[in-house]
Length: 133
Image 1 (cartoon, rainbow, N blue to C red):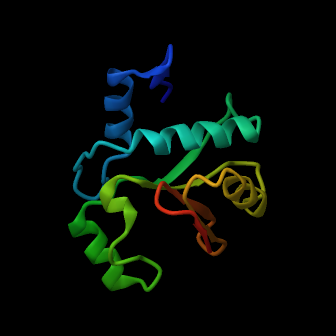
Image 2: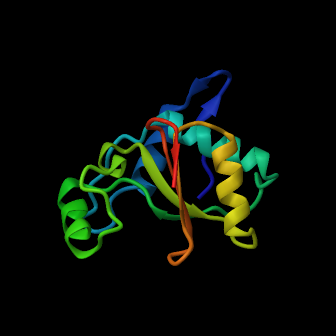
């Protein structure tokens, strides 16, 4: 998908709606309003990595409380009070980019939490307090 969510110094509402739909909870199709600051953070990451015209794989965006509870029960790696439920977190990977390098680049932005999940091959980013794991 290619959509514009920021132009002329402000958010583009139709673009945000498109992104909210793409980042919905795919388990039950529930849509939430993603934190626009998270989208700006992803854009900053893309710029930092000179990745603006390439793919960004999204593993998980919004997660409804029901989905999060099921995932939490099945895995110790899912936080009970995940910021995914507040539409303030995203799990990503960039094809062709080293995951450790992606993790370092995300941490350098100091925009929120950044987690490294080598076994699952993704980096978690959120707009919560700055912390790393």
